[in-house]
Length: 136
Image (cartoon, rainbow, N blue to C red; front, side, top):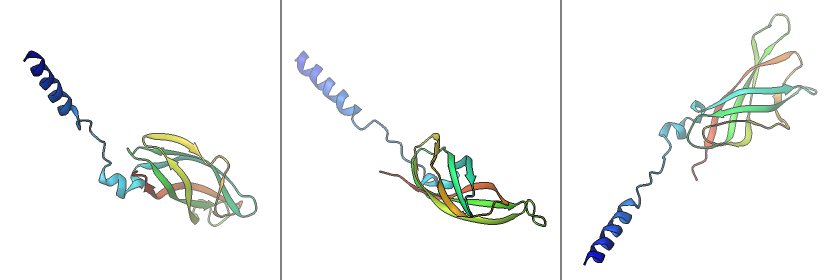
């Protein structure tokens, strides 16, 4: 009888532990607004004959889910007289990368073309417009 009672208690303990491991669900805002969780911290660029080549994107993801296919927009200001310091152009593109959750890393070290430009332009900043949440 003592063995049966001990077995029943052990089975009940094991059963009660099943399903208690909490699965972390992403916030609704992480799915709907990835741009709130992704930031471009740094980047490099150069203009070989009127095409802007961006390299070394340092991107931070403060969300709890990974994101892929990050759409960014670069804003250019001019060094030309009459428009010095003004935004004269912008361009958008998709970075074909996946950024893990709660991370910061440097991507696209080999470079990616991101719109046309001029050697008289300077990239003021790059912002994240959207991304695809990876929910698998």
